Amino acid sequence: MPEGHTLHRLAELHQQRLAGAPVRVSSPQGRFAAEAARLDGQVLAGAEAWGKHLLHHYDSGLVVHIHLGLYGKFYESPVPMPAPVGEVRMRLIGAGNTGDPYGVDLRGPNTCEILLDPEVDALTARLGPDPLRPDADPDRAWHRISRSQRSIGSLLMDQKVIAGVGNVYRAEILFRHGISPQRPGAKLSHEEWQAIWSDLVGLMKVGVRGGVMVVVRPEHDHGAPSYAVDRPRTYVYRRAGDPCRLCGTAVLYSVLEGRNLFWCPTCQPR
Image 1: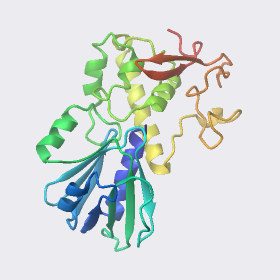
Image 2: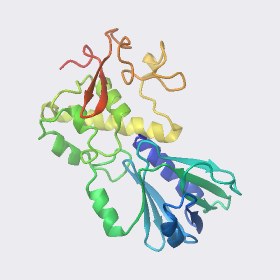
Image 3: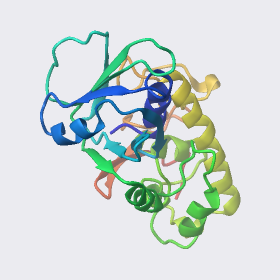
Image 4: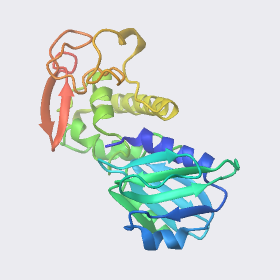
């Protein structure tokens, strides 16, 4: 599932390429056809992300809420766009403020729906602070973490606690700070939380700029590749059984609340 930096990168792209002018909206697949007809020809006022949620705001007050889920993805296409390929839930074509034609197809999202402002407010109220949003308040997350007996590994993946963090950032940020994913949130110090938050902000901004996660420090960025040769290196994510890049101990693996968990038992003692 795409993590928060991917949605913020998409929001920036759609803001630059589509916002500020009318857009053509259609649903070749048909599952969003009625909603697309309501939006077609309206001005896309802006795009923003909150955690793993993408929001397209139209000047009429309608908002398209998109959650990509496991399989959703946006595909760019030249304009004029070719015939749709696959199950295209929503097609957007516009020129935005640049005047350059631009088109995207959305395939396979978990959610693609129209909301009104009160519904958007209800959605965002359920989400924790997003490290990539300038209005984020890390103390909101700390308030919940510091009072919880759930593991910090679970809390970081809970979108009601902190929005946008997924499995990769969870595994890597805890390794970078030497914190066991099994440690209860209440056993985390405020200083440790501040360091984690600050690091998340920096790492996720790098992900927005480059489109890929960069989580290994330069001095450790050598040796065996990560779980795929075309992926940036990771410290522990998907490296079960491989030697830790720092101490050589075999990276451990388990399942925590239905999600894969990776950590080094030496660098992240319980």
